[in-house]
Length: 349
Image 1 (spheres, helix red, strand yellow):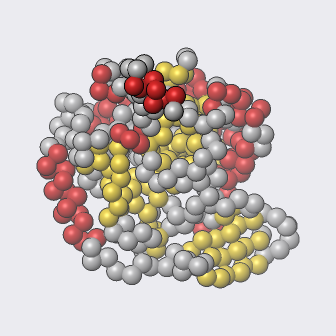
Image 2 (image 1 turned 45 degrees about the vertical axis):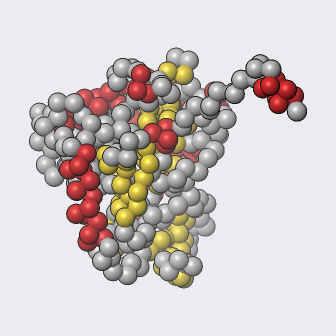
């Protein structure tokens, strides 16, 4: 009633609209059947044009009034730079999803190995990935560039992010994060940096500024992260992973330097200053890139790729392994069917 009276007197003003989340600037479009080799998740910008999440989404999250801000100006929360993160794998899920770096427009797809869809093992006592897992756009770990910190070359992918906030994010969601630290994983003699980050919209985000805050407010989380990356390939018959710096998590400033280096590698890639091999650099929005295409050409790429997806065969069965390092002295394997038709194996070793 009071609002009606104020409106009648001309004193009432509509409250300002809430700020737009990053995902409002982008949306996703699935093609093909989920849990199948032909499933793809394409990205569109706010104008409805297909884009590459690898190349066209900016590394730095801009202010809410994005179109009125110079493109190189990062959004700052206090004194903290905010980055865009592309979510590939929601927390607690097992399907190994990734940006398809070798396909036009780089949609998200499920990884395939030896003709089978890949699922990560459940590393006891956890279920699937223990964070929202994804990548920073416009970064690239160059396989021809030796990282001076690890003495190993890059893994040929955008840099990975483990988002530790309280919300489970959707696949393809664009989340604004601040970086807290980094872990140097050495995966089959390749440098595979893992960034630790938190969603700036998380209720606890104001408490997190650096890697020591993770130890303080989420005790045990970094140890669980190290353990997860050490063992996650063991169920597939591979050895434990190794780490640079003896598994020490580096701080925020160190992580920012790593991001800067991988961003420079990406810029060289997109401007044809280095050999990207099979990496597909097609993009819609990168200025002065020889790989830039029109919005119409991008739409044609998706339509052409989608024609084969529509003929998608029945999904091949995948396998999830539940892997435990406890209790010791046992070596047993149990198998059963998941309610989605996925074979699950449980091993104690």
